[in-house]
Length: 231
Image (cartoon, rainbow, N blue to C red; front, top):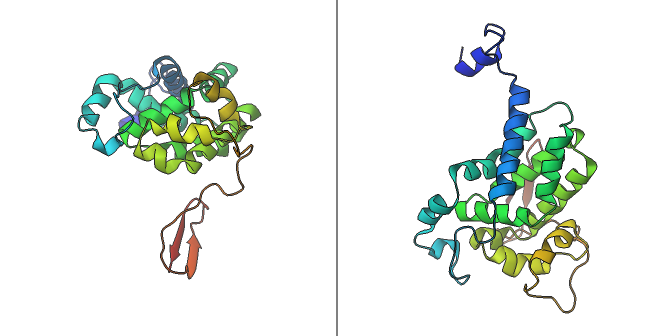
């Protein structure tokens, strides 16, 4: 028996027994509160946007200096904790999640993940919220869907260079999307698309380029989340 199994099981005295579902919800709530309080623009104090992440020689040192361990953990695991619940989350937690998703903090979160080299984590986190829609309010799920479309559409620039979340991705975000409506106001000096800006997300989430020749075969994983192709 592991320590976790002991403290969560019937053999542990009630005074010390841990309700894992409740503990995860509380941890998820603390993660959201941490992100709301600590996330900020240009958190690693970069002096220029002309360098990609890989060209920043002291990137790891900047991450450790400016992004607390608590914030790093929160940015990586908040949705894992929240989605462990089988019942709808209480209003307080839902409000924290709404505050996070309905503001420019989503971009600051992606900035942290970009600096940490963990951008794909955002895809899993947002998909968690969407797949657990039974425990969240519809507005929260819709916001998560919009944020996921943003990440998938601009995955390459977000991964390559944190500043380009604001320089390249945000300006080309559809004008009727929830993320544009909430985040663009915080960046009045952003580049503006004078003509031809999309109003809605296209039906395709992203276009992948991985083959030079004609694709001859495609297979999907049983859960529908992964695809492999051969040419």
